[in-house]
Length: 251
Ligand code: SAH
Image (cartoon, rainbow, N blue to C red; front, side, top):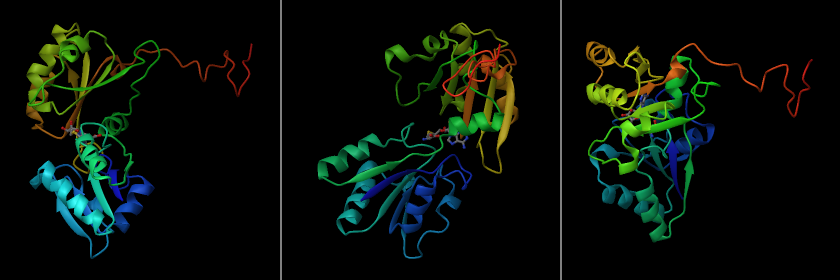
């Protein structure tokens, strides 16, 4: 059995109990050394064989996974955050599927939720936005035609922009072209939940400069939208004038 595990955003306490146990029991560990905090692996068996996937291509990674599994070893593939978000996990699963190898996915705390926690914000404020868009800037991976950042910006939903802090000038320019006011709040969180976490708060007009001054060029989440502001309506769920399944309204 091969386990794909979400390691969480960095803080070794932000992995699930199941992920923790599977790492502790593993004979073979493959992890993305460029992003996963190595402390997440602490507690592994002394005999465990550890590979850093940063130095391996898809064929090499799946070869290690398949050979180990066929030898009856317990394999864990440790991804940063949650593997379903920019995890390049599907291509591995499809190869295993073809080989008839069983695998399981264990979710993790994605960096976009660790970012909200660091900022102490809620993405889904009533009357502000009830939608979260997870996206990225076009890099070597092209964006599908209907998902251009400019078009996504027109929704004014809460946006979490991965893998893009290095293009902050273009990012802010594109969001303004998409209809955001230049004074729209934007936040960048570098290494959310790590000891070296940094938070930069600004507007679409001053963030490119602020990010440069803070020397942030990678491993950061950019979030934008009215949810960073202070205007919103109270929830219906806890409104004393509304009944819910569990609680009667007071008149
Ligand atoms: N699967 C991961 C994302 C992998 S893509 C997840 O669910 O979080 C890598 C990108 O994720 C980085 O470029 C950055 O935008 C973001 N990222 C990963 N860890 C982060 C962290 N601790 N703080 C802020 N952003 C992070």
